[in-house]
Image (cartoon, rainbow over all chains, first blue to last red; front, top):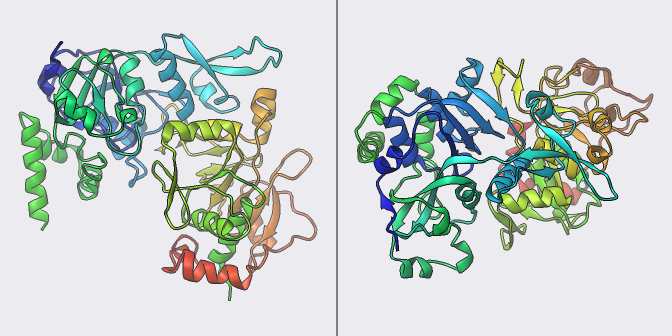
Length: 283
Length: 243
């Protein structure tokens, strides 16, 4: 069977400018940050990004990599407003398709099920319809005759997600309480890359928890990356909590200064070392 | 003496009275204390979350699993009553948490619409505004995130079918839409607040009856629960200053 293990750099080597990229996780939770940082080290730009947005969006927006964002929100959770996303919006630096959280979810389901759209009772009456004039409604063909929003499929060229454990074949399991929508991201994308805290043998993966936490299956995965602490500074329960102190630093440091200190290295290893050095300074 | 924050907790708790076995989703400290008070007293069947993926009892005992995808099902299934915040709200209950100014290029980008559109069309939605002002209670919101009564009606029967905004609680009083055309009405004043104060702090004309009742007094047991059990550290006073 195919060994799909690769490095962050291998993954980025398979992406290119102008792509539509889905990013899993939710807000500042279990974001594939090591892959996002690798993306920042590349020249890839002009992206359409689909995300329940957190610092993944802030980082990519601050670096000018996003042409268009599809999202229902961007937040750091414990810090409600993402400063770099805010700045980008207030400067008109990116295009936005703003959808409701449920519309977004059904867009993922539609894409994963190869449907052009799915109907939702959401969006009607709200300004989501005004700011997305391309959205259409659909009438129930049954006796009720109700009208719904037809959320278009959120199909993507590639998806990036981060999970707790994975094997080399591309099977992956979440260990925390919430799967978020990472399986749907993988199934809604033409290619999907899973980073994980720890790469394990398949037999060990199966023993790491109950079967229903085997969220992502290998048929929907193109590549697997072992990236310990790879969701930093977002949370990756139960392996680690959000690094609140570092997130505060991220949110309050001018972008050039933050990028120079933490993102200018040649590798994820350099980033993790810079973070460790910063934490040691704080003590 | 009952503080303003305590009247707010009572007013929030009352939002969940007679709701039965639904999820109480409070956003903000005072609504969270209100939900817990309601569950401890007159609405014991309410469901609560730990703010993550678990349904929990008052003591934190896990009784169920509610990750985001199932939470969204609970919203559309209608077995939930959320109390959301509002950066802006208008007389028909249209609410904005997305951005201030022109959406194309906002002067202040906020959270985004989040789940406000799906919430307002599917499960009862109340609002909590800790600082009542004409900047929040506006003539027109800049981006309709949560749908108000006029917009739900205009959008047709599918939008209006499960649309319901039971109440708005602010630090000045309680408001509802119990008027023939669903315009916002001053339902009660928190003791110590005058009708004039509310008028001045509201950017549109409220429906105000000749006699406006006061928000009810907490019982001695409710006060004890708020002060000794639910919020012994007095965090409520940080969200609502005593006038």
